[in-house]
Image (cartoon, rainbow over all chains, first blue to last red):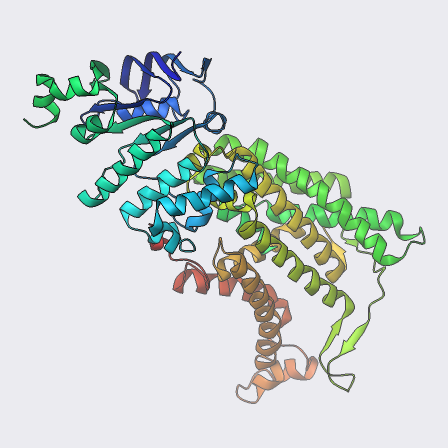
Length: 236
Length: 312
């Protein structure tokens, strides 16, 4: 059984039908990516999964249970974490406080403290600046913080929205290293990316979104070799 | 009291004009309890303590209901709508209080015997009363408690997180509705305590007292930098100083007899009432608002306010 399944999902956003009946599944332990151009409905899909938007039709199933229509804090407490587009760190909280908020729904203090140290060893830059406010960080550092914050909840499913957006190439590489590491630890990931090559190279499977519908899907390797994908998204 | 304002503003960017009424209700509730117990022979401190204990939950309930009924439905409305609602809520609360406690000015029973402590040796030196000392101590304690709550506890951090980005706060598993309710309840509890202090300081209570108090606390919060807790306390202290010193010195400076030395024409008035002045302590309230206007003109972010441009 899949951990996450979108069934004929329709989502409207500001009067526009942004997602028009997509079926997507993510199995436990998988790294799946959604690629597509601007406005294809990728971010809208993630918002519908996390309860920030409510689907117009269709269902979001998570761990065998329908979660569409629930509030986002309830969904988050079931082990589903989103790293939002534009990172969404709390600019006036310190790095430590941001990470603590990631673990808001957890009660085991020693576990949280342990995970905090784990995040600091994963992102040494954050450790150096732990008492600074997040607004003073660079874009890449904020992205690390946003990922670290999401991991602090010990998610079963981690959703990433455009993690490479606006970052320097070196930083993008570092972020994708982290994504692969997280995936190899057994966390299930759904990755939304405009950088199709990077996303497909890191993923097991992929879906191509176009105008709110899934036009192609399959094995990441075969998508990388697909002439249509190569032409439209890999710039060849 | 400015603390309550600033706190609610800081979290949801709403000027809660009904806060003054919460203070008034706190004052009135404590009044009822104190009057009821005054003859019971309990020690006065215990009675005042019970008054506060009664006022706090009543105000918390009021704060919760107001948020739930009046503000929550408007959370996504343009900012003007909740502002107008706040004024409406304040009128409703005033008239509820009118129904319960009548429209008379009620004398707050002075059950704690007033003792003056002189700072100098003579009886004319600056003096401070035991009630004033108690008020200062309680204010300091509230300030410390609030700072600890907002900066050290998980719910406090969640309050700040919610104020910065409610959507993402929801993604963290934070129930923002609970956090906002909690903010209102704490703000109201502070208001209740403030109400009891105001009542025991001035010795009177009236169903419309909240209005002026509210405006003054708002001025104090703006002076200190709205949304900033330390600023609210600083603003409150400065506002108090400005009021008393302003009333005192400007009063002396515009004393009719004093003016008579430079400007003829005040002679008759000076002879008739040598104590009167043009802008004396009757104008006390004016100084608060002059300050508010000056702050808004020259430093809208307040003394300790963060510049809005700092947001990343």
